Length: 103
Image 1 (cartoon, rainbow, N blue to C red):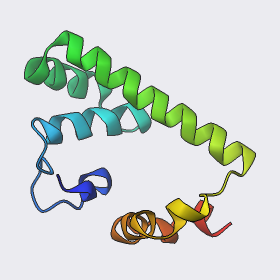
Image 2 (cartoon, helix red, strand yellow; image 1 turned 180 degrees about the vertical axis):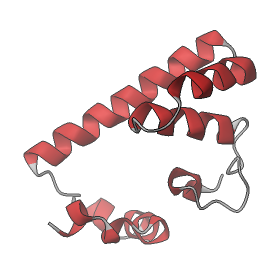
Image 3 (cartoon, rainbow, N blue to C red; image 1 turned 135 degrees about the vertical axis):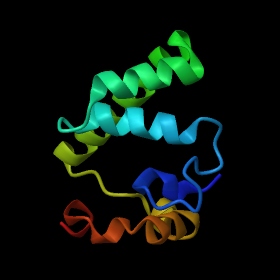
Image 4 (tube, helix red, strand yellow; image 1 turned 90 degrees about the vertical axis):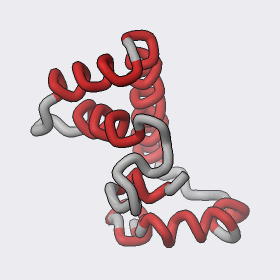
């Protein structure tokens, strides 16, 4: 799996995940108003079915909610996650370039 699919920078469109491109498109449409949610949802249902699409939506909502709470409370990464594997992931995804990461 290529974790860079999260930022749209994976070597392949699906990031090495079955239906990854469709799922990423659906996630982005849920999170960004200017994207066509109806079309993304229809494509996701066609690719993985209604049940998996509902599961994907609940996972997207859960992660978004967790991130909003963490951002609102100013939670920082713990030292174990900030170094080692966490630092590698952060560097690969360019997370330090986000304004919230520097704040």
